[in-house]
Image (cartoon, rainbow, N blue to C red):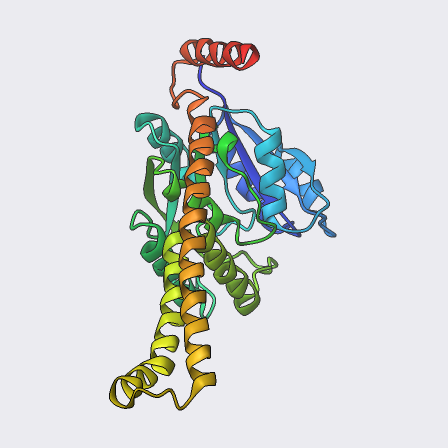
Length: 326
């Protein structure tokens, strides 16, 4: 008996493409359960998905992140594949990605996009992707080349340990940082990336969604790297305090007077704030370690991806018994 594989296709007004995506996934993964999560579409997306043989579910709250959170909570499978419903990714590579997940075993396999046509990326998207991916590589680690790819396969233990807090397109960033923060085994497989079919319109807004992703990266840096984040802020306060206070200290050493008392008080106050900011960072670092330990334990509560379904069932049953006893 093969391990269960599920495919999740988030969709909002993708009637022109979703049917082909479902059929391509079915050809590549004939035993998989294919779910189309309709995100309040106003066209014939649901009818096209039904006609192609997909199981259709509905998430009325707008945003890809909301769909992912719902799907990760609802779907049970040893391997869960997500792919956009716009037919820009090569769905025929799905079998290779799932096989790679089990062969590793890995917790995540990312379909790293490679343009098959020059117009696949909208103007500014390629540059934005490189900039945002570069920021994540600097802050969290180098094990990623295409942070914003929407074509991924996850293990059960990844899915059940992922908090899925994002609401919209920034969910891929959250997925990437989750794997990097817990040092989950991840692999990449290059996949072709092409234009949308005629009649399909992108819902991604370059500047608005780019700004949302950047804000998420900064927020994750504050939560996942609190000591470094607060050290930078403390450094800025320290530089300001030294700029204001050092001339006064030198003047006092020369004349034994403090001619600019308000400035001296301000400089001293800024230095105290810098110390407090740094201490807050170290305190938050302790809380971060506790959160990571809890997330790691949740991750380890599930077995590694395996094609041996009997072993998986025994391990899951044992995990359930231990959780019940505790």
